[in-house]
Length: 131
Image 1 (spheres, helix red, strand yellow):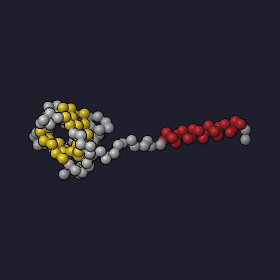
Image 2 (spheres, rainbow, N blue to C red):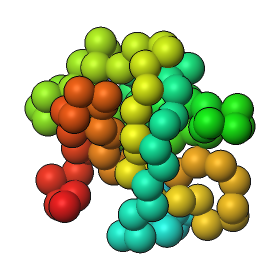
Image 3 (cartoon, rainbow, N blue to C red):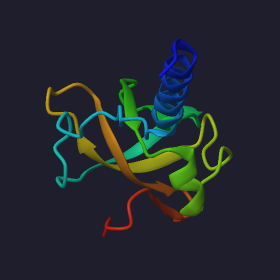
Image 4 (cartoon, one colour):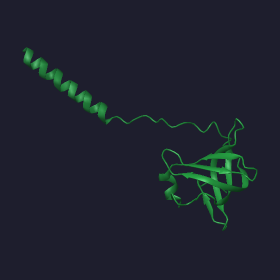
């Protein structure tokens, strides 16, 4: 075999490896739900929405309770929630809501948002299993 042929085989092999590497599926970098008391829903009434953050990878509700303490509730992605009827306009600052959530294990004020009940009685669920 000539040096030219060996070089061509090496280039072809390198190109094939590059193509295969480019076709690989990226690994998941999603965090675990271990930080929440998953499946143990707690409810808070008379929460005032401060901000509704509609962003990837997770949405967030920032609200204050009737004593003025700030709470933060993580939610599913906008893509997931839009299929469940949510939108970036679902919640507005100043709106009063009740929140069902899975609390944070470390005791901080917040958790994973399971459902929101609006003043008019409309219930918005994040998870299909929420009862």
